[in-house]
Length: 140
Image 1 (spheres, rainbow, N blue to C red):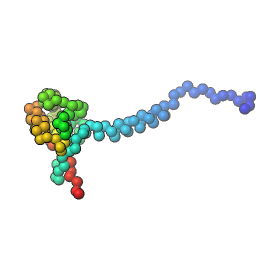
Image 2 (cartoon, helix red, strand yellow):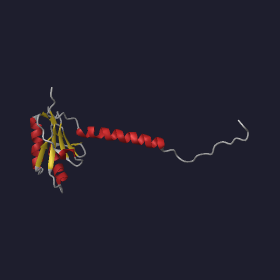
Image 3 (spheres, one colour):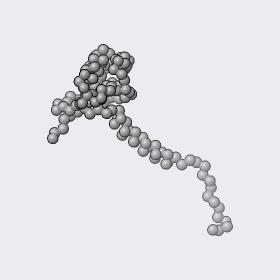
Image 4 (cartoon, rainbow, N blue to C red):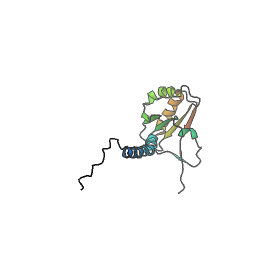
């Protein structure tokens, strides 16, 4: 090394490129995983002639999921709710809405009684329209 060579100047700026790369990767992961989590652990009933319900995919759609074990989840928020408290919570979500449709996602192996109790609680909450979410049956 030459005696006249000087060390490079000190850079006092933060290099944010690696941080931005990591944040973009995390954003993409959350964008992919979040819809899968919000659907809940429900295997939908399959039908040959389903009717498309575009409102069920809206961000503010009110969806009640009934699992195989009879647990009830309420979205938005995907929170577990007791059946006796559901009517009041759904009424609160419906206030000020023009579209008073609530969608029910019932597991194909859930008991009929559990789904019937959910529908009764929704009717008690003042639900005008009720949509049952199903899947298109697959050809064998």
